Image (cartoon, rainbow, N blue to C red; front, side, top):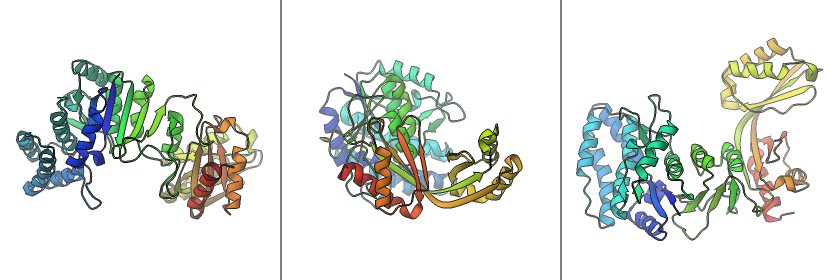
Length: 439
């Protein structure tokens, strides 16, 4: 059995956390490929090493003295090295970083050094091979991942390594220019490594025990999700539930490799298993609840709209011409409503209204702002009668007025529109009826 294990910044913030990670890896001999992030915060007011590197490079790019900033970064790493009882020296690496900063090697190169240095420490601590991600993860000159070339390079390199540490978050172009993924990109690196070695499972270790049914800032101590499908995860992530970098899903999904979200500080917890499909029935009818505030709706009314060919396309063309993406488009016989992000729409609202009038000659256009969208997601919903009824009964009982209902044909999710001020109350009401009272 082969496992890829990725550890986030909070899991590697100091020597004590490193030791926890070491214990986790050594407890299972199949955990042979390790992807570390840069050290995160040790306490609430602390600064992540990646942010320290950004600050250091900013000073260097302005021609300012950055020696003190670089020294502070060096101290963070040597504090870890000392705490682990290692004799490792990073002097050559820091000398090269200083030279590259002076030569204006680029902000992405600067950001990548956090993972690079942590990878060096991790490899020395575990006795694993160190594989520089710049040599095996390939980007094109525009900063886009070259997936096929990356898979070839990773497969070839790792086939020669019994166990290895591959730093997360970065790779390089063919000319050696370092490129990074967006924040949280170490998740993507772990996924690419898992695909390349045909891993049996990809364990993603962080500071939470997997996904929760809903946001713990809204519902106190919500239930964990034991298993979730990629499709369910996509729906919840889109509506704001974030534990995993979205791009991390695709490489392993194509290979049928499950992802296990685990907690470094509670390794006994099973966490959440993310799979392509599963026969296991979910614990509750719903899998999760997620949502966002800050939407507005544009309601277009026109008699006999349903018989007018191309009506919907023309309306959406107006939004496209203004560079505005839409979220949902529920419609009736003579009405069509477009939901968009309010902050994107406000500056261009009059151009959009004028465009709609010009292209489709509506009878009436009405707008409503300060709306929130809530996604109730679950593979178990289609086999349960009365799911929608229970949702709306719960909302009515909580005195929440429903502005919009949109259900996908897959019956995997139901989207509900409410006023911003009712958002938290609505989430709590839905959670209560499906998870707490389970009526």
